[in-house]
Image (tube, rainbow, N blue to C red; front, side, top):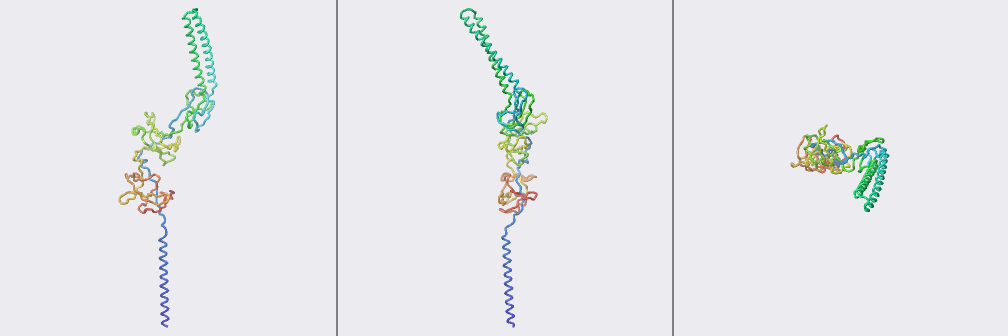
Length: 375
């Protein structure tokens, strides 16, 4: 009996040991599966570096103008018979813009033609008389003085013909001037006279902004104009497209201040990419040094120091992984840190929690309002 009880106890002990061993195996397996699970991306605040030139530069507001702007008008006076274009229309060189009533000018041309015919008849008569007097002189029937008088009469008649021919050419030109044509391809920016208006010679009828170069016109106060000169570099930014910077330079500085505002008119031309601006747009012009144009401003919280070298975490836009990039700190400001080179305006950098990141770590980028950012 005691032997059977001992056997049962031994079996129970073995079963218990096996159960403990199985539980340990399952526990270890569970731990291994948890360790193999990928780490969830850490949320991180990201932003673009800010150009430092906008923080230190002189900023002026102005309007976009064409490099060449023409005030077009008729070269003769008259009454407008037709206007063939509207404001905003794009015209080609030689295209008709407006027409005057040509009746009076055609009558003037007809009168000039009649005067020419009369002068030619007088010349022909004087020529015939001169030839007759030449024959009489050869026969010694008249004196040399009488012949010279007739010769001078012929010369006067020839001069009258030349005068009448010139008058006819002017009259014909004036008849052609009843058509107002565009002298260059461009855009009509203003119409100053309508059909039926009587205009004088040279009175502006339409304004034409030529195709091609665009400029921004700004006004600089008299106490600052001495700081600028022709070819001074500048950065331009359209108000409607903030953040897109265009390179330019000063092309023209007015030598005289405006009598009312006491400011000097300055024209800033674009180096390239004129299609980025439109006529009449509001634009900002930044004047900064070449060194400031290469500097970037980042938040102080974005700065990471490793072995005494300042660096920032740059986010890969495809993989959302971060990499540490050294930067050269130029100065510390109240708004942030100014760095020289190493960063591009379109790059994304981590601006908070930089000491909790590691090389190659994947993050979930968010903005200052904790909304996900699409890189």
